[in-house]
View 1: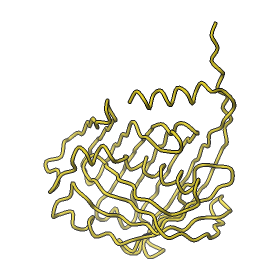
View 2: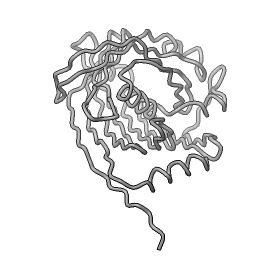
View 3: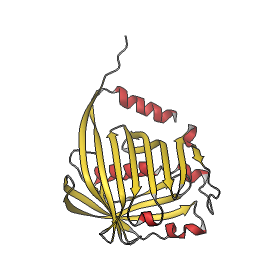
View 4: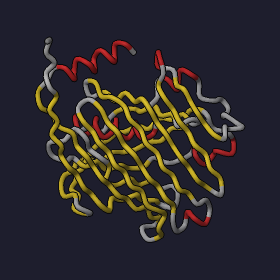
Length: 264
């Protein structure tokens, strides 16, 4: 922990101008291309040394027939040498006339402190171990890490361990094909990646559907002059050939000037 804080302090004290990208992104989900599933809004502030991201998801159409969902989440952390180190994750989830809040925070030595209300009655068989939690990011920070990796390397590669307070899983990117996207305010290149969801721990028998999600596809916007490549389309054959697609793209570039520290 001290090493991370020292590295961050050095980055801040080197002076010189830098910049941050602010993205306001909206999405809609549909099954079979015509049946609405809901909406998602993501706001992300990504600088060279830190990030803050929030998401709002509201179900609609077909999903409301099974489990109406209203979800708000946020995450923040630091970025060192393009490595995303999450620090805080909060979730407020209303679903099927129920309500759960989750707060995760990285403590001293990388230990994960969790505040979950109401707490889970079952934690999976096997439950997520302390070591698995330490090696993971929260779901939103995983998205940021993917977007930064794709934006920097222009490649679909890597496994991203993720922990959401109960479930531990891997998201994997592979393949890679450059295409074009011209819709919802973004016009430019995208990198089309194969996306795999691999359940690891924290799951029960009743979660069998979560374990068997087939491989899908994620398209990342290769925005010019940005280290952040947000997704513009995510597709999976489950459930009902679902597709989440960008409906609004807004990006602002903000210049930041860190003042050189001087000794009086």
